[in-house]
Length: 495
Image (cartoon, rainbow, N blue to C red; front, side, top):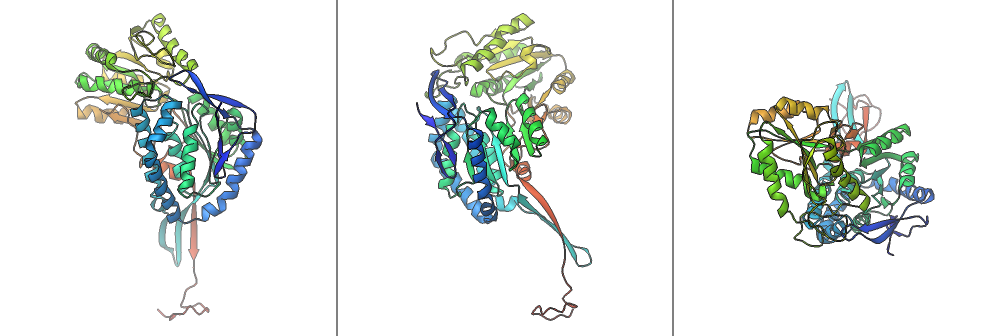
């Protein structure tokens, strides 16, 4: 059985804890590797190495850090197919989804290439007689990232690019379900010239997470995952004096007004609801159909689903892959089993139809007549299930979304510019799409939801990422007046 190594101090390190977790190929339903789950001593060793590497990395010039990021970007592009292939094998994404994930990750490397500009401070001359005030940004020290299974390439690049470029050293604990991609990224960063010890990838479970949250040498922790775990990460990390950004779950609504282009809305519903098998925090989960738009919209969505090819990511013709584990596949299927009992109508049941004989597959599903209070509506499903709620008015749609515990992303489909503008004003959600179903900000903005989708006040990547990974230091200075100084300054001391 192949063992996936840690990456510590610029090299592969064989796990020594004796504890291992299985890594499956979800398209085949077969274990393909094992990953060592780090002990406390292994975690402490990696943290000590990162701490020792910090002074020299902090002192490295901004131009040197930018140069490494530029080289890293070129290496990732050169290894694009290899990285996307690993995502497909361990996560199950089809090639288009894997390539799209990596493309968004590369955007974050490109943002980090501009680190000389991002680290600029401010300067105010002559705030008082002979007194200037200015601010500078400085790195925190050793920082950590805890990343989810659903974006094994992109989310680590959200974190480590800005964290490292800003002058910190980094401990990355990826998901143990699909960890190989992060080790490859670490190798490429070392090849790009990153000094040993600046980035360390350590695999683990809750023991590893708790070590990061409690260790006195970890200054900050970044996390993306479910809301219960995000809440735990935030409360535990902050209780131990750490800076924490913790992104949680989602239940993203897409409002479709009666004037919307039905074909555009149906295409968006299918791509945003079923891409990556619905295993993404920005997936559309609920369609809010306003007025009489529900029936033609459901008909248009239902007509598109049979053409959606479900199967292993190794086949470039497939458009939706498996779910990550058998347990998760069964959990998603349970929502379909319970929806009818709660009074909803299962229009398309993903448990039915032709499915690959092996692997953790479900077909796309559509559930109509969903209401608040049903599990299928209240809970994050994280699978290829679209729920439809029917409301009479725009006002009802807004109230419905604003009452939900999650506030990650939302969208509206309409031809009415006034309605769209009012929606972006009214809605209590962090990321809003207008005729765009998945409103993920580009790398030079920042990513983050509201309510139970974000704990703390720090968004991910972009300008907010630079702020998170740096301290601001403000300096007030006064120098001797050359006209009165007794020191020979080498120039005339007269005005």
